Image 1: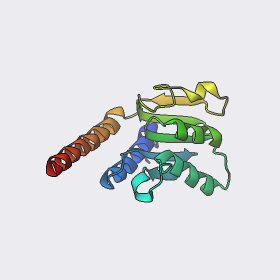
Image 2: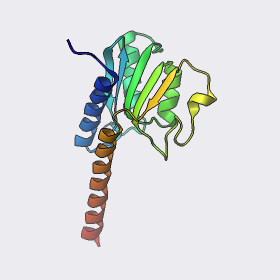
Image 3: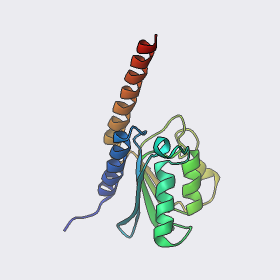
Image 4: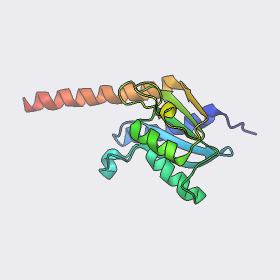
Length: 161
C-alpha cells in the first residue's frame, strides 16, 4: 500500500511544472488535495491561453471548486512548486484553503513571506504554510527554464543585430 505523503503530492505538482516547461511556460505546477485525494491539478498556461491570470494556482482553484461544487475549499491542501504571487495568494485566501506547501521562495512576487505576507494581513482559514518542500527539484526546473530563455534571447539579438 502506497502512503500518500506531502512529498508524494509535491511530486505531483512538480510533474505539472514539467508539463509547463515542455510547453515553454514558466514551470510552475499545483495540485489541490482533499482527504488524501487529488481533486485538481494544473500548470501555468499564461502563453497558451493568452491570459495573465492563467497561473497554476488559479487554474487549480477553479478546478477544485468545480469538483467540490463549492466556492470554498476548506480542509483542502495546496501543493505548489513556487511561492504564490499576490494574485494567487488572494485567490487561495478567498477559497479558504487550509494549508499551503510550496517548494521555492519567490523574492520578487512571493506573497507568503518572501516579498510580502498576505496571510498575516487578512484573517482566513489558512492554518499552515510550509516552504521548502522538494525545493531543489522545483528550483532546478526554474533555473534550466530561465537559462534557456536567456540563451534564446541572446541568439535572437545576435541574429537581428
